[in-house]
Amino acid sequence: MNKEEFEKLNVFGLGNPNDTYAMYFTGNSYLNPIAKTENGISFANVTFEPGCRNNWHIHHAKSGGGQVLICVAGYGYYQEEGKPVQKLSPGDIVVIPANVKHWHGAQPNSWFSHIAVEIPGDETSNEWLEPVTDKEYNKLEK
Image (cartoon, rainbow, N blue to C red):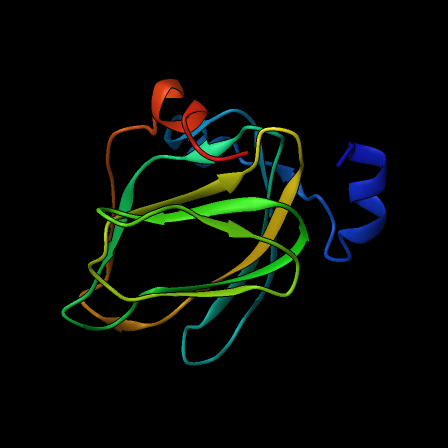
């Protein structure tokens, strides 16, 4: 999916370059914060250019916590450590429990956008780990 087609479908908007977290991404990503509730649930539209993905990471929590991805435009991937990659399309929802090592990003020939919903919990933190290498990424089923 090219950028022009993608932007017509990405109803939450591209946002700004994700410079704060750029060191944890291969390729360019964009962040558009949408809302935050009184009890701490935050919603942000994260957009990945084709081939962009974040590093392996873990959303730690003593209790509660985790993340939900709501796919809104384009095509992406999600993978938990030790499991096969999942292809993502608009309308797909991924529930990521706390303390699970994973990564997500765009497929090689498509822009991709998802709403990232951060679930509040006790003693939450994010641990950014190693990148998904080009060798690992290029072996995925296209």
